Length: 476
Ligand SMILES: [Ca+2]
Ligand SMILES: [Ca+2]
Ligand SMILES: [Ca+2]
Image (cartoon, rainbow, N blue to C red; front, side):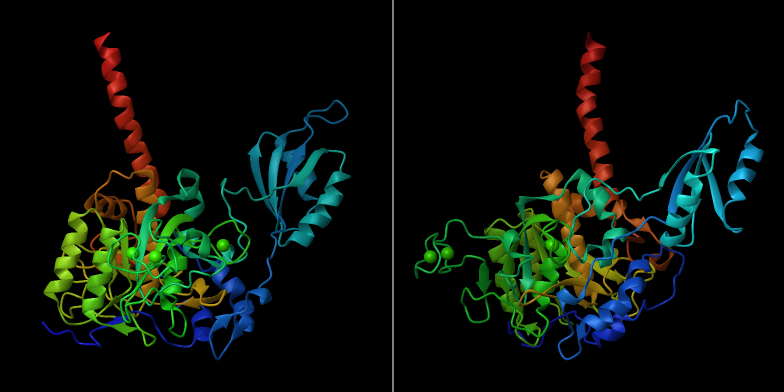
């Protein structure tokens, strides 16, 4: 069998980054809108971009602390020994406030009041404290899930709202026992937001010129470069496609810098077979898959594809599934129906194929789809992640949607290591958010949701634990 050099290429969109950041593409077709933070920060991001490279200068991005715009006000039960009716009390309260104010009764005598902005909230708080009918005034602050990481770009990574990542991370933040192999252009393993989560071959002594673990690869510490048969696996393409993909899966969370990966604890294996132009040989992709299987990866991320089917690639994917390794693949960026315009490995058997959605919960205009061959949608537009040389940038493509699913698979496997690839895939699909834009476009009709699948599995696990206990009680 011969392999065409241009047969496989990465699914990264190459249009200008500034326009990518200008706002959402496509219309909201009825799903939830996550564009708030994207729009809010788009100007800031545009200003921060270096146009020639499309790289965001992280120092230009300032954290905006959220000042409360709502107040909690508790009224006195009685004043001067007189108990007033609720209507009288409310009138007394609203007289002091702007006309169009929203007053929400929380519980008896306790109100939440929403102001136009934080300045107004502060000013009226001072006034209300002087009101003799008012017992207490305090800021109605936002309450966050237990784990909201401090990474400076976290709030701009809109995928975490769609995926409900913070809530998911209260269940699990992943595990260093779960390795995701990024079969791609390589990974910048020195990146400040990736290095702590890199997979390392513990049986290989670095740089001694000896294949210490006898796996056929000399000094393979972070993975392998199948293009030139070396251990040099740092991305050498313009944006660092594989580095961006790796950050989406597992950038280190809560380390102040950059953003957060979907699975903040994970091990990322760097397997390079795509060259600096983002294309590579099928034979090298196949070698990468077998390396991942042999070295114990549980998930393989394949953000690439081509138009020609390959028996060798299908066999490698079959072998991965038989070995308990989930292969997550990109649907493709042609805006095409994969039923009529085939894309591989998306159209192969035994893969988990991913379409792209945007912050309006619409399907991306560039995304391939198929009610049978594409399984789920995931955020793939305006995705901020790691770029080579300690930088960050926003990229779009099914290349970016695919690692979202790989990250959720890593979380699921961290919490439930006994699940098979087919079970992981089925659970993620069954517990996606069904959105109108994906009806009939992907097999699950849904967009990825990390929290939903982890919660469902946790509840199922509780039932399994409770069952023998009930049986014991019954037999007493
Ligand atoms: Ca070795
Ligand atoms: Ca060695
Ligand atoms: Ca980080």
